[in-house]
Length: 424
Length: 72
Image (cartoon, each protein chain N blue to C red):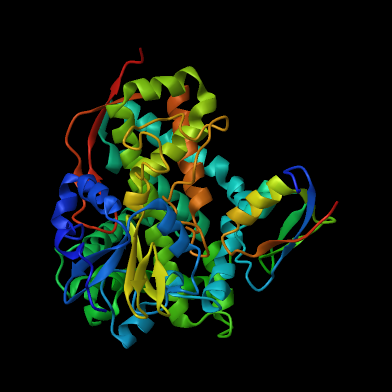
């Protein structure tokens, strides 16, 4: 496309991964939201249309016929055709492939079926919180935020929980892969595959594929009542799911099932520690927990963007966009859009109260078919965590600066010190 | 002039349904997701007050639910 908009010169850069070491560059997104129409953002040899306002993120999300997930890639950079095929997951498909794959896993993640995991989630949460309290605090990510979601998703998948630490380690390397600085060599974990063919260009993806293949063989011989067995059964019929689709699905469920909710729980702790009066409101009135959980999700925005590719010349926000253009929905920006969220930069646990007007946050995307598969699982985990913290009157006090992921894609926190503070 | 309390009839497009289960959470008397095929269907006469029908139409990620007719 020809970048002819006058806004080009003024577009603030929001893709430089190192920016995110200091947190989301909200001042730059605020500038972007104020630019009429869409802003053209240079990137590598080309660029993309930056979609930063709530209304347009919503529109793009809900119009998959015009904004494809299957073309090019759903990350900022394009993949070669063979790499796209090798790495294609639920995320990088349009209907009808998306519908077929989504239905294979959707049943496990419906609100009704997720509720059956509440007891498991609560038991894991209590164990982690009790240990954290007994120690008087420590690294919140290592002690609570990381182990809770990985243990839950492994329970659902039927993967041995003893392997949780290993799978979190792999996830950390995958997060690195979303940035620009990988700490492991291309042949780590015995990898011999070209990195461009692996999700996040990471040799850790090879390790996760291998792990998923091991699980597949085990469950083929000895099926259980778990999600992996269900997938293995589907994979045995190539019409339903190919081998490549199986391994990418396993990869997605393990990675997205732990990394994103870990991020939400990490930012939740940061927000509650920084806003003790807001947490006190919840302690005084536990009926606010559901709203507080939604506010934490809005505040955290664990996945900061997704990209789509335009299928036919069209117009968005008054800007002409051409077939093949990249369009990037910045959820991190839409979740601070003052046009939708009053006092958007205030952490307000009552924001999503049933009695108050509110709008959807985009922590799970902007709606449409790619709505986060695990949305109700994440809500359950955050809600149960807040309930158990409230029951114990656990108040958090931050003891060290967070170490943030060098990534413009996942809003990761690698570590942050927290200790207990006595309730007022 | 249709008001928010007026009854309308809703339907599910089985091709578009992605099995999110949000409809059965919001309106369990009207929608049920078949756990085997993971597709939602209408299990009642499909009648809902318009304002509630609008919510379930808006929340459906597959955009599979529509209002097929107004009933007066």
